[in-house]
Length: 212
Ligand SMILES: C[S@@+](CC[C@H](N)C(=O)[O-])C[C@H]1O[C@@H](n2cnc3c(N)ncnc32)[C@H](O)[C@@H]1O
Image 1 (cartoon, rainbow, N blue to C red):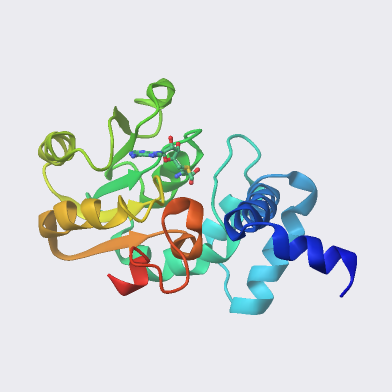
Image 2: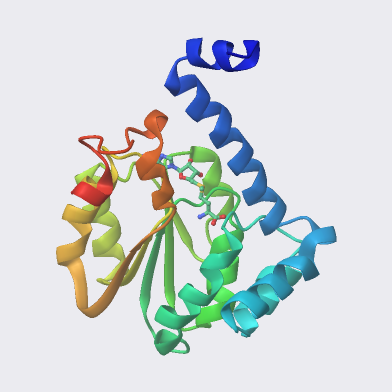
């Protein structure tokens, strides 16, 4: 057996997983923001998914604030969210980060949409009132969620881009899903994390969201 293979066998799986995950995180940043890749991303989406939309234009030309999303989500957002454009919908995103996605959603849904973002990080309050309302709290705090839903006056779309932890996703879903208006959408991002041990997932892991 080669020495490198032998050493790899000695490294615990959770360390290998976190090493691999680091690589993927870099890809997210690369595809979502850096201007030198803009056209590459746009062409990739156009060719692979035969998709063109102003959402794709916005995402690939945005150089102001980071929208922390995988670029192949764009056609899916457009497929499911486009019927709500221009309406007074109630849209909640879990995970504000640097505020870029709230700006994108404001641009996409229009001025009438009621857009809220929640985040556990108090620094996200800096984005409150820019493209939507920001409230600080945890996605697993039911009292907090209750107050946000009450303030919003209901929910048409929930986009969970928060902690991505297996122990959190079902709690938030269980609480928020019954509050969705008829015909609403509950979308959970980044479920590849269901296979990341550091977030409580893993192949056939008890908490893997796909087994929920
Ligand atoms: C991937 S970032 C959100 C990216 C943003 N939606 C975008 O597309 O640009 C995830 C965010 O979830 C927040 N977060 C982590 N745990 C959370 C929790 N328990 N409740 C609410 N937000 C949480 C983090 O502070 C972080 O800002």
